[in-house]
Image 1 (tube, rainbow, N blue to C red):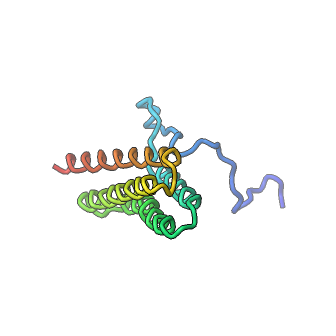
Image 2 (image 1 turned 30 degrees about the vertical axis):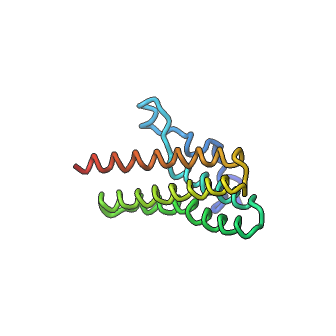
Image 3 (image 1 turned 120 degrees about the vertical axis):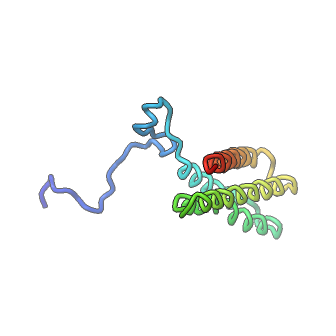
Amino acid sequence: MREDAPVYGALEKTDSTSNAQRSTPNAQQASRPRFDLEDQLLEFSARIVRFVDALPNTRAANHLTGQLLRCGTSPYGNHGEVEAAESRKDFVHKLKICLKELKETRRWLRLACRSSIVSAPKTAAILNETEELIRIFFSSIRTADKNAR
């Protein structure tokens, strides 16, 4: 094989900048970084998985684990549905599903903390991120509704 021949299937080394931090030509024109919600939701889902893996193996914690895994990881998958919405109404509906799942995640995290299954400091960061995502989706829904009029 020639040394200069391309190797198909090999992964190219790319810069280590996450999608959330990578800027795009339009963002550079506006002098602000591009916001990548998909990447943020992927990271959030991964944090949820790590969070529940660290919970104790008790009956109550196992129940919370199942609930948190379902509602805490579903916004990532549902966001793909948002991107493939067939109409503006469908788009808003799917955004609302993501918002609903994030609000449910917040409730289960608060219950885990209140019931002493996990300490408040261990839930603080993930609760803050949940709140941030709730605000993002709420704002997106409000904007989409406003633009529909």
